[in-house]
Image 1: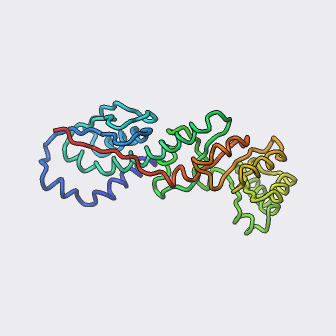
Image 2: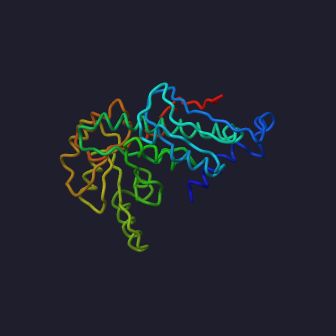
Image 3: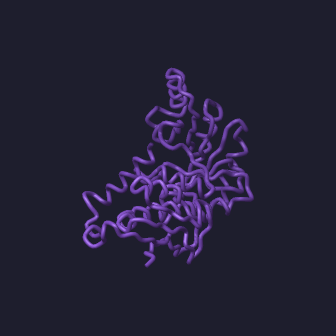
Length: 278
């Protein structure tokens, strides 16, 4: 299972050949509890992941959860109490907090963006601007926060961006070569193409052969103009420089999808703490 492999890797990265701080001063048979204390308002994400991490490392650990993935949290809340071997709680503490703080940050930001545009029929997407080795968890946090995952990797959707178009010899060549390749290899994949201006947009519309048009770095005003000329059978997506501060302007245009790299690459870790119960 991919998630298990990642979690075990995260633990190994931190523990190495031993948590000597804990091994040196905490008895092997000591038992204890600790509480996850919320120190910043937001949306919680990563609880199910943490449950799995504890079970992989020490199946005798018990977790009493008061908050679940997607729940709003506020300063002073106790999200869960973990009980079991003191050594386990200490050795896994930083990995547990790193996962929860990062995932909760992304879920919180995503929820804020989704809430801001809730009056409009637009879908908020993430991107592949993720941390290597942590993509699954970051995209899961977007989903928990109310967003929708775009393609997970390079393999589950075709996206022809500016460099593809330039290297392929142009828009026409890129689309035709892509369709030929998919047909030859019996691959069923949606095709999305990026356009940078109205000239490129008109060329794509006249050629067809794609499922979605990404309007990259269009201003909201330019986006309105572009959407008026795009036939209904094309899906439309806005991307490039979109943040929580300007997302409402883009949602008002009527575009179907808005992709925001900042959901994952700019979310600041939520302040959480694991405090020993003594």
